Length: 258
Image (cartoon, rainbow, N blue to C red; front, side, top):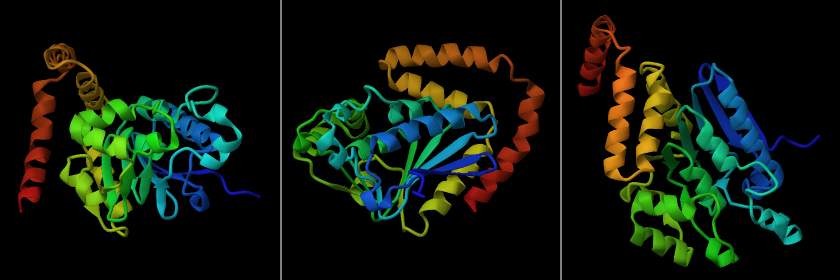
């Protein structure tokens, strides 16, 4: 019996999703693309899951589209046509998605990483956009997202050369949140998930949505969006609720300052 191409482990309100084609560097076969999309659809439907962690089995996070499969089925090049789109499904998950990048994230794998809300990388992680070297153009947002994250000149350098970006350089450029040892990767990601789960529950998806909305708009429009959403949401906040949370906020602040 063959191994499942994706593994899901649920612990409390956190789901850890592991791409499970280690012998193929977790390359995105049609089966794996569909499994990722369906997994995140299922997680969104599960009211108990509020944060997801996405990682890869073995030495790679994801090597991108399965070139062996593409060699015999070029219909898979347009990965959003004829099957489910994993990047869109990840983006539709209302809670935060923490990318625990354990190894190389290449082309389509790079796009999966950029679909996450927070990136924690092991020292072994590297990123590359090899679309131009394969002879195809991206369809999951890489050409637009990357420049907004690291700047247009750096994005052009990476995409027009296909050169690799180290985990440390990615952190220096502001693309990843932190770089840790391989042994620390999942514990750090889980600690981050626990921190997120400790905020007011309804604020977690609402704040993520507000940030994403504004990121897609011009700055002036984004400020108007924030004001509109804030005014509507904050009407339900009572002084008693703020007072009740105050002690916990102060206590946590003291702990983090020490």
